[in-house]
Length: 298
Ligand SMILES: [Zn+2]
Image (tube, rainbow, N blue to C red; front, side, top):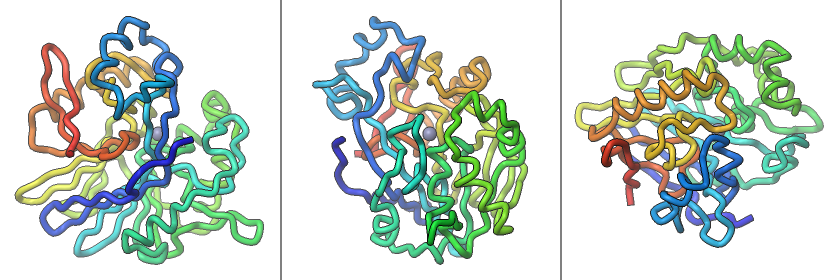
């Protein structure tokens, strides 16, 4: 597995600093597996611009990054999405199984100790967004960020409470090792999907990929950024918004939300930071023919 490049990327929104902290980045998904509705013609049509940065030419796999985004405001340090984690038992998701990523070293290189994080926020509660909620210490799963309040959207939390719904996603014990210990430590807080930290940082409901999926909006007088979670997994979904990933819970709502998101932010100055776009990750949505393209911040 090719592990990539600089783990650190930094952007500024007025007084707010936004830093990407990489867990890992690799050519990972076969397009037809990630997007079951993508015909070979669709893939062929876009291959020229997907290669080489977004699709590995030799193997045809789509590039994926797993990263957290740290939002440091003058008042609080908020860590969004906690990747897949170390030492987790994921026999059905081998890309996350018993890993030993230098994630905490990367976080340290960005200037943050686990103790510095005031809030942890998950755009949704899939296994690759909650992993570093906890770490293994003396055989027990303990919160990685000892001083943080962990904010989960109530709607999202309630969906994944249901064992059968969890089982239709995976039978790996991510709920037990990455979510329950946060409840038990008393650090979890269930919030509405339109929760606001203050005037400059708030969340918004963008459901479909999961029922309580949220995006995070960071705004200053002169610049805005939106952390878009898994509304799109790759830039191919800007060009083909009807393509759902195999992980989307509500297919119809995921499509409607993705199109609404693209229409909302297309040709606007708002920078988009998706949860899985490879380095350099951030960019802007631009209209292109009757659809859209993602212009990376190079
Ligand atoms: Zn994800």
